[in-house]
Length: 33
Image 1 (tube, rainbow, N blue to C red):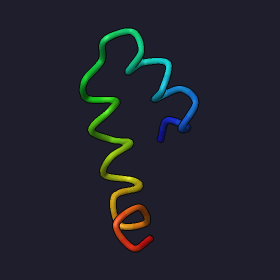
Image 2 (image 1 turned 90 degrees about the vertical axis):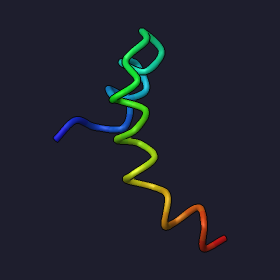
Image 3 (image 1 turned 180 degrees about the vertical axis):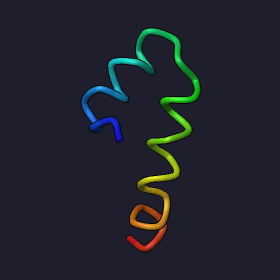
């Protein structure tokens, strides 16, 4: 499993799947704020 930092780097390089993984990982946390 890729770490958050790696996923951010991949997203910044244009990898939309990396962004989707970050959203999936944190969506419940963010929505509960």
